[in-house]
Amino acid sequence: MTFSHASATIRPVQNSDIPAIHRIYEDQVLNGVSSWEDEPPTVQEMTDRQTTITEKGFPYLVAKVDGQVMGYAYASSYRPRPGYRYTVENSIYVDQNARGSGIGRLLMEELIRQCEAAGYRQMVAVIGDSNNHPSINFHKKMGFIHAGTIRSIGFKFGRWMDSVIMQLPLGESDQTLP
Image (cartoon, rainbow, N blue to C red):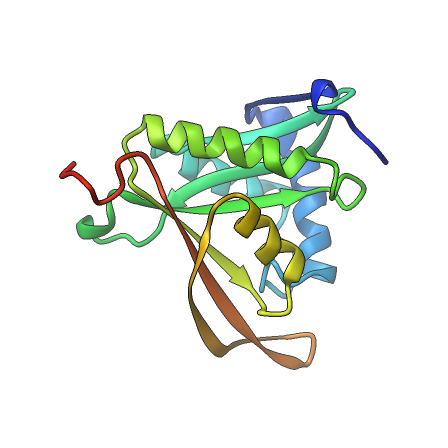
């Protein structure tokens, strides 16, 4: 399936988007390595997760094409301690039929823009599996740099998997105090 950038709309999540978000995420839980959950959460659990993120003021976005949610992205707290308050972790999921279409880029560009506007200074991507080349390459194209690899930290699909950490400076980054 091919989409043009002009046909996609990026906007804040709405409650009516959650079933489509659930469908996209369920595919990753069952078939992908971007999520290390074993069982897909329910639609209600996905609703609760989205509410927790947005109530804390983090951006949560969807990409719609022809009225259908084809991807979503959000930022959340990297770690709960106050010293990490200027760092966010990104999460991005694109429908399997829209991968490579530019939807992910549109979502990430807007997510970065909103995080910079909110005063965050670093964005961290925690990528499941060092063999997840599509995600690693996507983040590289978006300006992220490799910050480290935690070897054999997760187990899914009958094998050990690494966690790749990538990092993107936001705004003035560490060049000025917040």
